[in-house]
Length: 261
Image (cartoon, rainbow, N blue to C red; front, side, top):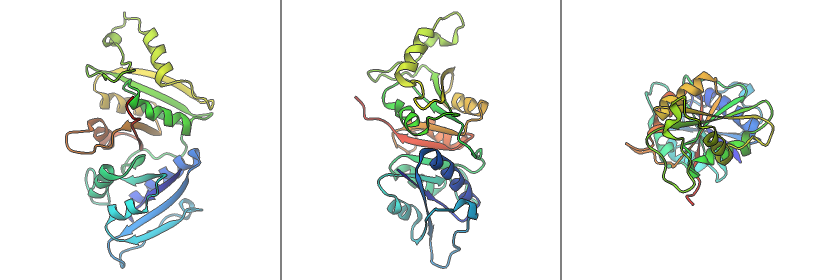
């Protein structure tokens, strides 16, 4: 696979590229850069030389989202920032890419923790086979010595009904309940030991999923959150993804859900 970093001339561009290079270094992906100008006379992209070594750069003229999607090849991971300079929330280009770009997507928000080395990865798991694709890809791409993969399961009243699911029992927040057998079964199904020699563990939290994941990611100083999602970026849907895009302390890698059995 390759990684296409869509960059703007603002301060967010180097942040996106730096995160992309760290992820690509670990995964063995090659990085390319695309910069879209609305008009030919607009400022060209200027980046620190240390970030552009052996990194091809294409500058094109046109509508940003359309040109970025056109530049993306079938096996590319697309990396981009959530907004351009002066924008608030998720900018229109990022919103278009979230709604239309094939996954996986590496998303960086201004102010997120800058990653220099990929040491800790948090993978939220709701306990269903389709949502466990994030863990499968994490183990396949990022597992290695010196790296810690943390599966986070949040116990809620909204449990998945997909065959093969294994949500935490509702009594998990009661100290007297012995849930070790569930924990062992959950880990075996969805978070098996990292085959590359890294540390692998499962933690269970109770409460609002977004709040619990954000707290856990901040607590362990995670460098990357890998999350499964369906790609539905429309109003009123994908609320967990929206919350993490707005408040996660580190970059997000969004991967497509596995086909339902």
